[in-house]
Amino acid sequence: MEDFPQNKPETTIDKLEESAHHIAGMYIQAAEQYLTEEDPLRSRIIAYYTRPETEQELLNVLGKNEKEVLAYTQNIKNITENPLRFIEQMEKLYELQDTRNRRRKLVSQDRLATDEEYKLGTYIDVLESHIRDAVIAAQRKGYLTFQSGFKEKSERDQFMDFYNKEIVIPENILKYLQGQSVEIRIENFDDRTTLSLHPKGNDPIRLGKWKEIWDTLIDSLPPANSETVPNMKLYREHSDFRKKQDSLKNKGGSWSA
Image 1 (cartoon, helix red, strand yellow):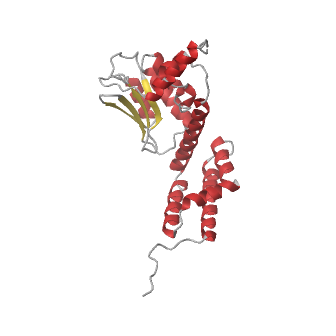
Image 2: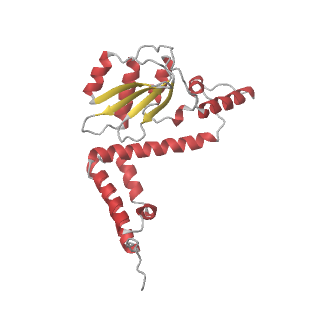
Image 3: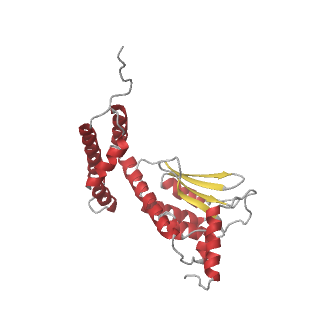
């Protein structure tokens, strides 16, 4: 008896190319529909999805059978037809991409850190742009931060991790966040205290607005209580950074301004 293939039917290359072209078009259409002509995010999306290489890159992720192609296309459709998801996810995607690129460039550099960067255990440039100023402001108030920005496994949430055992949120900032349709939560663990921000509104929160929210929040905090969590875990990335900085300083360098 002749054996018949049991695999799912593969999509022809012509259909794959058509799907890739269609997906690129969905991104372009959404950018033109939801973002103004002056918006840098619109320009960046359109520039990327009109470049010839992009459709080839899409071909590499589409899969080879019809079910995979349809599932991927439907997922992009769900995103591009939802202004909130589209704007927030695209801005998040590009910010994370830019942050990774800055980190890669700095790995090979021997730039002396500022005192604040030394305390942080990293160059300030590798932090996401909307939270940098808030992290420095928190450090100046005595808060020991070690992670911050976009929260993993969440499309919209933001967070900041502290070694401080206690974080007190003033009443005025609770009212401010309520007016921004943002919910705040403090979680206490034995190795960290996590402050999370969860948007509850139906309008996109752009990075500029996130910066305003974080700056306002940290500015409102009282000076830090110096008591730390009982099982404070120091990350190797931070200790390695400080060791490298100590070595640079011992070679005769001076701290940057």
